[in-house]
Image (cartoon, rainbow, N blue to C red; front, side, top):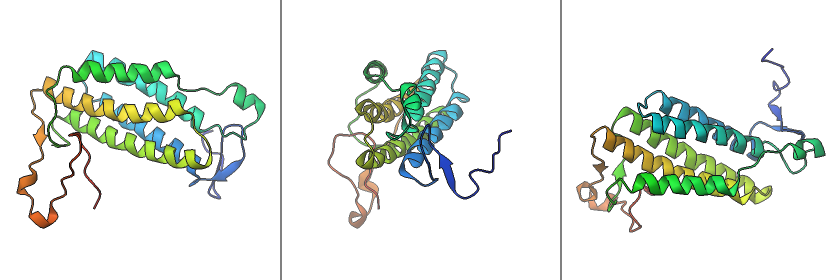
Length: 204
């Protein structure tokens, strides 16, 4: 039976730990990682590259490991801690290798680009933004409950990889990056920031 009624009062149970409010920082981090994983599932339905499909599916499995780690608080019992899964440094290294590999096939960016393009690329851009949110939630959690450095590194690198994959997917589909033409903005609303060209725009 999928429903238990135990969460009707706005609380949920952590792995091997106490029950906490559903807006607890650890629950928020876990939920954001789960949302990222489901967003990648949507991406898969638009991909026609076996190579990319295999990579995204592997990332999904690694996110399940990461989510399990986040769901296990330091206060968890010895049994839960003993079975705790963790992101390894080799997995972070592999994400970096994938970034270098796919980026080598792209023209260097000298300006910001607008998310979009082919359906697959648009969904990868969306996944990249969701990944950034998951990273922010995990960083917030880390201030009160230490999170492994590999977990923080993995989420940070993963958003970069998803950005590169979005651009690569557009290239494979014959779709050019849509450049942000900042000179079209009224002067008083010019939001351009002199940073290395990537994708970040300051919030309003």
